[in-house]
Length: 313
Image 1 (tube, helix red, strand yellow):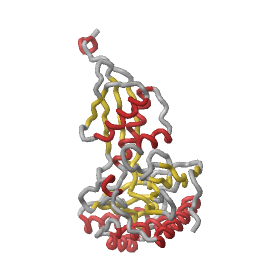
Image 2: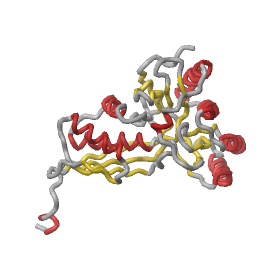
Image 3: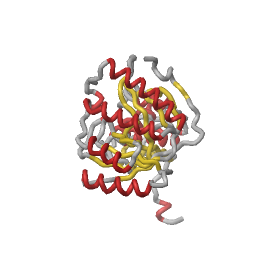
Image 4: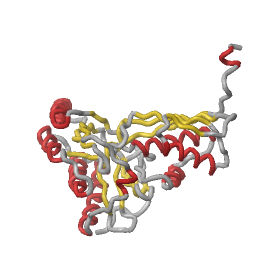
């Protein structure tokens, strides 16, 4: 036996979990009902991976990097409720920028729940993860492999809308960071008329996703971005709309509670490469930074509603 094996510390079960991020939201607002705060996700190919390795010789849980305190809190909650108090190391690795409205915190938590559940050999369905996350913070619907309407403040699925063909998002970052919890404490200035408009937009978006109507999706995303200006103003929204018009984009999507904005492009468009290049050049001139994201598609996604959709207006 090698010395490295002879004196290696004992290792317990190890679990691994992943979760994707989003580029802001296609739609976010408040409906004319109780628990009306909702969003519609825009999943993108940016990922968080969590690894949980139990240590049978320790009762302490630690997280790496150390600032991922919410992930550590969740790991403790799961082990305590499972009556399996376990020490170990939770490692969270992510390529999703933090504080930008890209669901980085939600992805951290969902990946953590999956990793801890796998290590402890306990089932971790979406409903169970929702229940844990509701005790921590408002959460995006990144635990569902689909475009979903989600009540982020109460952490509850509203409906699975389905999937869309792949799009690119040529995005910029206005700078700074936004704390999700603090943002959701801000009173919403939306009127009754605004709430009814959000209901109509959700109705339109549901149909657009079903029909893979990317032009309609882009139009709704742009309208949602404009309505969000009264809640969190983005100085670059109008210039980004102009870039979108110039390059022939589908619309503008934003991180409603973040600092990101992006021009949506159809990757199946024969002129896609030209449009993407022109958009990236213009975005770089506008903000001094640019990043290109690819949206995720989920073929054969079954529709699932958690309540009546859309809301009658």
